[in-house]
Image (cartoon, rainbow, N blue to C red; front, side, top):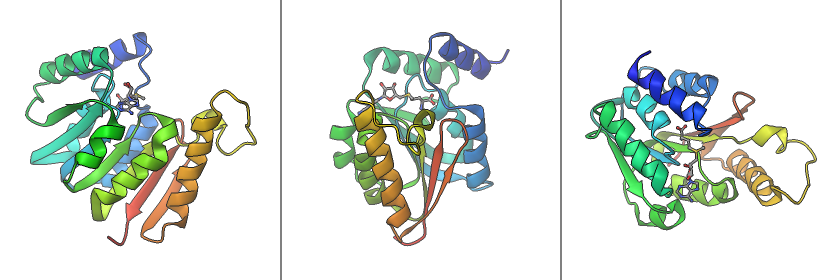
Length: 195
Ligand SMILES: C[S@@+](CC[C@H](N)C(=O)[O-])C[C@H]1O[C@@H](n2cnc3c(N)ncnc32)[C@H](O)[C@@H]1O
C-alpha cells in the first residue's frame, strides 16, 4: 500500500467523510490536462482531497484549504508532511465563514466540501474569488438523495434547503454553465463562462 492509499484507509477507518473515488475522477476529467495555479478548498478534513488535487497544479501552484477542526488540522499537517507537499498545500485554520471574506486572490478551481448550511455563502464568496475559466465544484450537493426529493424533516432541513438554494442559484446565474451530477453524494460543476 502506498502512502496515499494509507491516508485514505486511515480516513475511512476513522469515519472521516472523504471525497468519493468517482467524484475525484470526475474532477480530474473536467480539469483535464490543464495545470492550475491556485486551488481553493473549503473543508480540508485530514488533507486527503487536497493531496489528491496536488497533481492538478503546476510547479509553482498552491492549494489553499480551510479547516476549523483542530484535530483534523493536526492530522492534515501530518499527512501533508508525509506526502512532502508542505510547499504546495497551505492550510488556513479557522471558520471559512470568517476567513473567506478576507481572501482576495483569484483561484482557478474551488472545491466546496464543508458545512452544507453555508453553501450559498460559500458560492457567493467563490464567485468573488474566481474569474472566467474557473470551475467551482460543490460536493454532497444531492445529500443522500434528500435535496431533489420532497424531504422536509426537521433534522437536516436547513442543510437541505441551503443545498437546494445553491442549486437554484448556480442554475439561474448566467455567468455560469452548471451540471448537477448524481455521482458520489452529488456533485455540482459550475464553469465560469463570464467574469
Ligand atoms: C467532508 S469533510 C472534508 C473532506 C475533505 N475535503 C476530503 O475529501 O478529504 C468536511 C470538513 O469541513 C470542515 N468544516 C465544516 N464547516 C466548516 C467551516 N465553516 N469552516 C471550516 N471548516 C469547516 C469540517 O471540520 C470537516 O473536517
